[in-house]
Image (tube, rainbow, N blue to C red; front, side, top):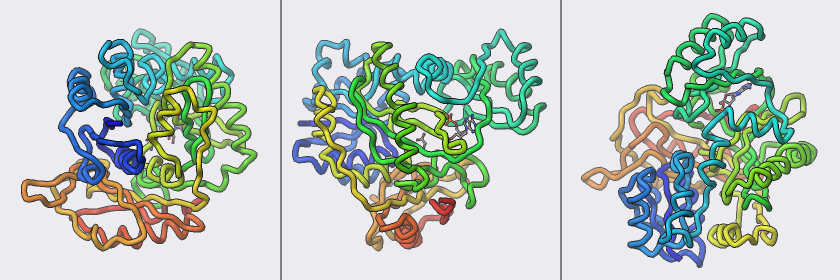
Amino acid sequence: MNILLLGSGGREHAFAWKLSQSPLCDKLLIAPGNAGTEDYGTNLLLNPNDFSAVKAIVLEHDVKMVVCGPEEPLVRGIQDFFRTDNDLKQVYFIGPSKVAAQLEGSKAYAKAFMEEYGIPTAEYREFSTEQLTESLAYLDSIPTPIVLKADGLAAGKGVVILDDLVAAKTEMTEMLGGKFGDASSKVVVEEFLDGIEFSVFVLTDGENYRVLPVAKDYKRIGEGDTGLNTGGMGSVSHPPFVDAEMMRKVEERVIQPTIRGLKARKLDYKGFVFIGLISVNGEPKVIEYNCRMGDPETQSVFARMNNDFVQLFKDLCEDQLDHTVIETDPRQVATVVLVSGGYPGSYEKGKVISGLDEVGGSTVFHAGTKRNEDGELVTNGGRVLAVTSYGTTFRDALKTSLKNAEKIKFEGVNYRSDIGFDL
Ligand code: AMP
Ligand code: GLY
C-alpha cells in the first residue's frame, strides 16, 4: 500500500526507516521530510497543518495509510478531518482524534483526566486569566520550587520551574497576560516532584494496547544534565532502574486506567500514547501525556523493535492489536543528538555536513538537514542528526555512538557525551 508520513524530524526519519522495510509498503511519501527521509521514499513540500493539501496528496497518490509524527496536526484535528471526509474515511490513520489529543494539547484536560481515573500525578490547581489575583495568593501558600505550565501547546517552552517566589509570580502574571497567546490563557500550577524521569510508549486502539520498549531522554543542553532545556539531546533504551516491578506498577496504576479512561470517554484513539513518568522513591507518577512518539526516544525505541511496522499499523486499524506481539531486540541502545552551535538559543543554518560516509556500526537519523542548491548536505535546524547504536550495555552502545559522532563535522557542532551515564 502507499503510505504518507507527516513530519520532518529525527522521529519521522526513524518511522520512514521502519515503514520502508515492510514488504507491505509500496510507495512511501514523507511530508515535508528531511534529507534523510529521502533515502526511504519521496519527500513532498507540504505543510501537515494544511489539511486540504494533505487530502489532495492522499487522493493523487492513492494513499491508504497516513502516519502522523508530530502533535500539532493532531491537536488541530487532522484525524477528525479524515474520519468525516467521504473521500478519506477509509484511509488508515495513525493518530488520535482532536478531543483525545487534548491529553497533550491541554495540561488542564490531562490533569482532570488523571484525577478522574485515579492515575498518580502531581497535585495541581488551574487558573484562568480572570483568576490572576487568586493565582498569586495561591503561589504564596505553596513551597518552592514552583512548577508552572501553560495549558496549551507552547513549542516546548510552556513549562517553567522556579525556585524563587517573586520570579514565579512574574511568570504567572506574564503567562496569564498572554505570553504564549491562547496557550497560556490557563495555567496549571503543579506540586514539584523530585525523582528520575523515564518515558513509556503505548500503542493503543482505545481498547487493547501494547507497551513498546521503555526509554529515557536527556533534555538539558549541557553535560551532567545542566543548562537550558532542549527538544532532547539523547536517549537510551532500556533504562535499568525501570525494572519488572516498576513496569508492573506503571501498567496497573497508569496504563490500564489510561486505557479505561479512553474507553469511558469514548475517545477515538488509534495511535501512540507517550507517558512521561517520574519515579519518586520507586513510585511512578505521570508528568505528562503526549499523543505521539517522542523525539529522540523514537530513534532508540524503534531500534529495539523488530516488527513489520506496516503490519503493526494495519493490525491497529483493523482492531487486531490483541493478536500482535511486540518483537523486542534484547540489545541496549543509545542515541546521541548532534545540534547546531548556539542551540537551544539562536543558531545559524546552512552549515555543510561532512563525514557521514565514514560512520560505521551506527544508524544516523536526520532531523534538521536538507540539500542546498549544489546538492550538498547542510544543517537546517537546531537538532541536526541523531546517532543510534547497539551494545550489550548502553555504555557500549554510547561508545559506538560517540565514536561515530566524532567523525561527523559541521561548523559549531555540539553534542553530549554523557547520555546514560547517570544510570
Ligand atoms: P512537560 O512538558 O510537562 O513534560 O514538562 C517538561 C519537563 O519539566 C519535564 O520533563 C520535567 O523534567 C519537568 N517537570 C514537569 N512537571 C514537573 C513536576 N511536577 N515536578 C518536577 N519536574 C517537572
Ligand atoms: N523527547 C521529548 C518529546 O518528544 O516530547
